[in-house]
Image (tube, rainbow, N blue to C red; front, top):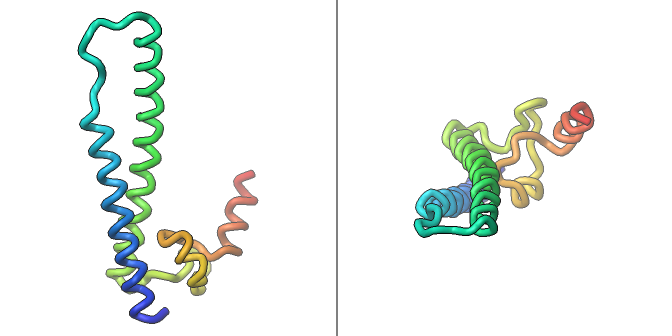
Length: 114
């Protein structure tokens, strides 16, 4: 993979990391209600908290993947499948810049998990 392609993807990963961090910070900063609530309001708040927890966990998982991809760039290991060692296609990396596996290996892993 060419240096300019990696540089472009690195910028995208950094931007993605920054967006994820903003969402996590916003979620952490938005607290619950302070006033008296009826049962419906309490139920709605509980649902919002549960959805926020799920979203937060997904965001943390995405953040971890992005940071791992940035680490692979720094170590000059970016763009290679972690399973077979072959190059991950540029098209795949453009769509999913934190991809760890080439399409064939990813498909094999997903078919085993079913």
